[in-house]
Image 1 (cartoon, helix red, strand yellow):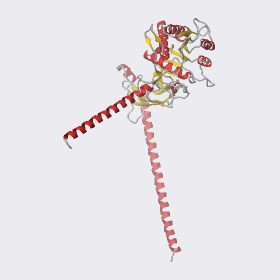
Image 2 (spheres, helix red, strand yellow; image 1 turned 135 degrees about the vertical axis):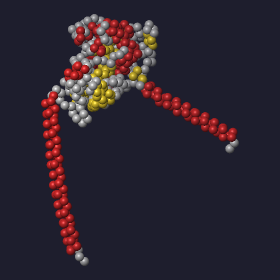
Image 3 (cartoon, helix red, strand yellow; image 1 turned 180 degrees about the vertical axis):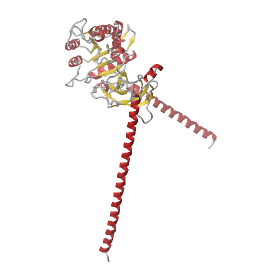
Image 4 (cartoon, one colour; image 1 turned 90 degrees about the vertical axis):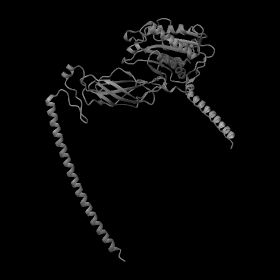
Amino acid sequence: MTDGIRKNRIGKQITGFRKRAGYFALCAVLLTLWPMRASAAPRLQDTGDKLVIVIDPGHGGENQGTIENGYEEKGMTMVTARAMYEELSLYEDVEVYLTRAGDRDLTLKERAEFAASVDADFLFSIHYNASASHELFGSEVWVSVFPPFNGYGYQFGRELLADLRGEGLFIRGVKSRKNSRGGNYYGIIRNAEDLGVPAVIIEHCHVDEARDEVFCDSTEELERFGRMDATAVARYFGLRSSVLGVDYSGYELADADAAFPAPRTEPDVTEPEMCSIQPKETDYGTGLLELTVTAADQETPILYYSYSLDGGLTYTPRQIWPQGDALTGTYPDTFDLELQIPSGERPTVILRAYNMYDLYTESNTYVSPGTYRYGDEEAVEAAGPAQVPEAGESDPADGEGEKSREKGEEIGLTALLEICLAAASVLFAVLLLWRAVGRIGRGRRRHQRRKEAGDSRDHKR
């Protein structure tokens, strides 16, 4: 083969290799981008040419709503609903209504009937939240249990909650709830759906929790919520506004199915399957206790945790489970938790893991083997030295002095004698067993010899 032919073949091989490499690279890029495209989808709801939106300021009249922490919900919802109305009115080809313009009583059925009377495409019920324990915080959107309304609510809820997360609010998720008959628990959703109108409840934040209160403690903040609600609605319906200079035509939403409820919206009525804690690092001189926390829930993500240092008598306020995500349904099942133990305490730790529906499972109990002693020299000297257990030993009781040590020595001597007696008993039993086994063995050998002798007598030829 000449050098020219050889070079030509090598060149073709290199060219072919480059083409194949480029093809595989393109496939790799497409495969990488596919999940991103698969997570977005067109709007499930078909509204036709005319779009009608009804905004419902929750409560009103005799129904004040939550009045926790000095707030009155019926007034707050009115401020937010009006701001939402004004913002949505700036968009083209949309009619916007309020179920109430002032402070008056309206039943849930009357609100739904009004929405149906104007041929509404969607009813948005505006609310603020509070909890009996005053420890819940975050935003949530409640949707219908049943398709296709569930899918409509889910696609809108994902849009709004993503915006609220961007503002710093904790996200509790897009959720549904059933009543005792298996229908929608919330009356506004149930009554609207009976009349063919999709409806959702927007719970913006909790007025009785410090981490949420900063988001709703002024008229400006309440109006800001209304404008954010309007923007999420505009994206959901693909609206345009020349006044605002935005065009959401063709905007893609979260993927959902009109025939089935979105998985993470379905009510979870069971606690997390497991929760455990294991000590990782301890420093009695600084008060550091580091635990490895593990929890698992197959249905909904873990969102919060709280812990007790006194064996479950009291618990801390809820804390955010690191990287728990109610929108994607993901959470890490394990993380390391650092606790600062007060000086002079020997903690008994229990931890609770809470899922998206606020159901919790308690961990095992970790009892510290030692007492933490640290701080300024006078306090440490007054409290006594740190009670740090030796390897394989448990911590002695605090404050017992010489009597405690003498008692401990007596208990140790007694325990040693008991161990010696027990060992002697075991040895004696072993010897008796060995002797009995020996007798049985000798008896079997004699029996075998007799049997063999008998066999030889019976089978002579």
